[in-house]
Length: 416
Image: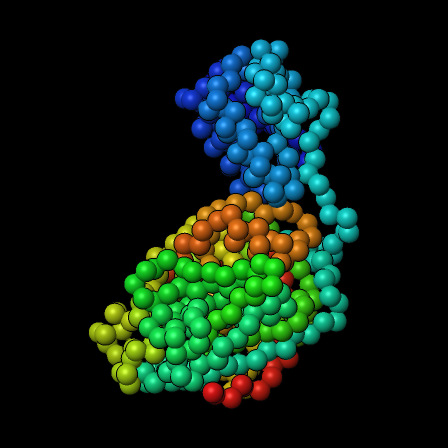
């Protein structure tokens, strides 16, 4: 089969010549996948030169029709030969896919035009969500006790994460803090969903999502939570930048500048160019007074990414950032790396790639759709590794959505 690409307004046309059988179906699928990953969500398949399609070809058409539909895009078959059109009709999919070639495929656009601006080659679209809304941030627990091996589940906090509460830290699911003993690991929650990386040896992220009256609850050894609604949604596309990607620190700095604030809360859903971070191997409440940072024992406690991982996957990130944080806040924050003077705390869940709808996007709907259809691969505390010769850099993002709002830091909650 011959596959040629032709750009058109609003998307891409793939002209196919030959047989779309089991041998060529995956090649067509790869061409569609490449277009989607390039940010093109309106794809026409010109079937004028296709004289045969098998069930393997139909499977590919259905797969990417569903994928693009979920991203507010469209996949269409145009100018099919009569023999192929008959097969599509008999398969019951002609009504979904076949369209007139004269009607160009155009992805659904957002009803409200966003503000557009650029920063170092990255294009941002800004959608107002709750103008003027300020998030309240609450620190929990004593992160300084991690270094001395004195974290205890008995002094943890049991927290509820409804649609208006987001957060991160070292957490676990269980009936109470003590009942989570031996399972505390990286944790994040946003949009009515919560997910943690258990340290009980399973290595499989566990999660809870809001369903009816059921609201996620988790036990935190320490962490940060935010309450309220995000003020703005930032859609970003970094293909035009020098590196073709946007560092997490650069994204934080750009958002802080746009919000004109020194502190902000973040929820990010984006395609990754590389993820850099760490996760615990053992639950810190089992340290029994022994510092996890002591060499060489640190290798048994912490797993670091020694190379850039999870390229071209989807990451869900929750975080907090602040410029010149006071001593109380700085216990929870770390340097974010080159691109900002702000310090922050960010956790990420890595999922298989799936395209994101363009334009304005509802956070709760996006998170619910992701959590209900995809399995998380890992949960990481994002950390930059910018050593001069051996460093692998920081987490880089290609395109995505970033919900953010100014942050008002409240007092640390008392220990139980």
